[in-house]
Image 1 (cartoon, helix red, strand yellow):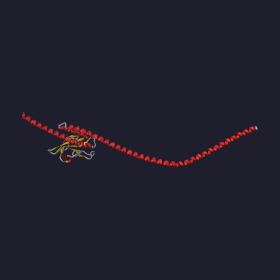
Image 2 (cartoon, rainbow, N blue to C red; image 1 turned 90 degrees about the vertical axis):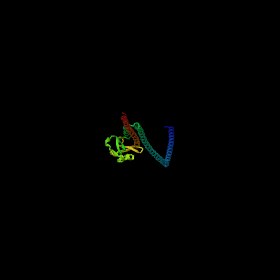
Image 3 (tube, rainbow, N blue to C red; image 1 turned 180 degrees about the horizontal axis):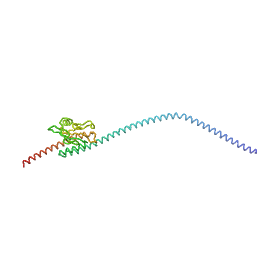
Length: 273
């Protein structure tokens, strides 16, 4: 190898060493800068938790308060919904009750019109019987009238019971006699626990025109589908008693006058012959 070649290689080695040194210095500078940045990050990380902790605590407290407020609002809304539902149920029940009452009153109006559309005594009793079955819901009952000559109350029409089995009752005696005397309604307290007694009926309603009692309506048994009396039933009893009493009284007067006219006509026919 010549001297010139040796100088050339030496020069290139020196250049490589210079480049290597600069690379090493640059690397050391990068490492120092990286170390400084890492230290700064550590400082920031140590300081941030305190700030974040305070902020997180405040946020958590606010969120908890808001959640509590929303829970209270939800509870109030649920309570209000329950109240509205209860009110709706009451309104629905009342609506059904009023609807039923209106239907019954309408039926009673029609029935009362039928009652006063005839003066035939037997037809009047039959119409009253149908009203008691269809509107009141009675299965076993009797229509009893007062004989003012003997002061006895006797059955003139029955349903579900043999007429001859119903005893004659003296005015003022027993439940039936007392109702006929005072004109006050009688209802047993426990309909379901009632045991049939022909002298002590489940229901006893006076048939009266103003304050004058002409008879009573007695009920011993209700239909299977009816286990108790509703509020409207008591109104129906009162209305029915008034209409029935008027129809019975009118038809009896008419029947008596017809018999008298027939008797008079018979005498006249005998005399003229």
